[in-house]
Image (tube, rainbow, N blue to C red):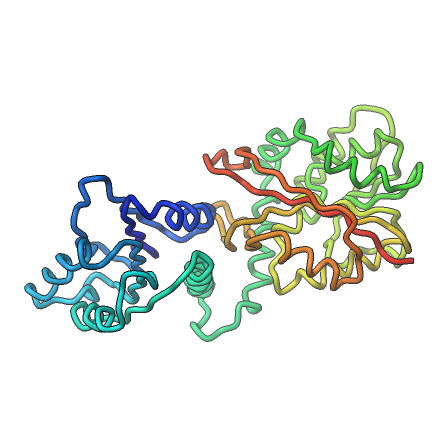
Length: 354
């Protein structure tokens, strides 16, 4: 069964590309029908589908499909369709009512890409609840621990941890790390939060810093310990970065590279507050996060929280009592699963007062 079918005319590319880009990493099953210059008339889907999104003008393309539904005397509900979404342009209230009557289903109008993205988030949240065996009315925070545990389980698979290490061990974000370390004193104590197989920890230790890497994946920590190649050695410890087992004010710097992308929104304020706690007064947080995506539970079991832009992250950083000092953005095609799509990243450097 498809979760979403998106149907777009060739001359509405912006909305189409943007929505599909945000959906690229989610576990929503999306089928796309993009019309070419022939402008083939629309036909309601015959397979199982939950939500249909129309991004084309009604009279020219949609009307024939509606007429066929009326002539057959059957609504699209038979295919499992529960909701039809139409854009705010080109559809009068009378026409929307006509469409609803013809297909015997709710029809809603949305205006603007963000409205479509919010709809997609609601559909995905509903799917996550269903997969966890929760009721439709259950708040998402009942899923947060399960999503967190699913991610840890994925990274704890030795074969996956090894794959992750070899994919990223030579891909050090030098520029983003430099924005952190240039603000730290010589020999500073740094926490590598969610260190994984430890390639960033080893790099920082090689620069002369005292580094502690924490992670909940024993498989990743084993690789981190085994991959030391001489010189200063970082320390590694199995720990939840939401409750780091050190006294307050322990570190001059905290580095969290891509680790918080797996933190459900239900825990994100708690997480940033924990970073603030373990920093010394005047200490520095370096944070990299994926943005421009929806929350998703991927096929390998890893959960990714959805942050549409950097403000949704940085607002929470500031709420934790940290002051922003530098923000940068980047795009790349590289990702762990070798999917062919653009991944957007942000890097934030923030300072604890004092």
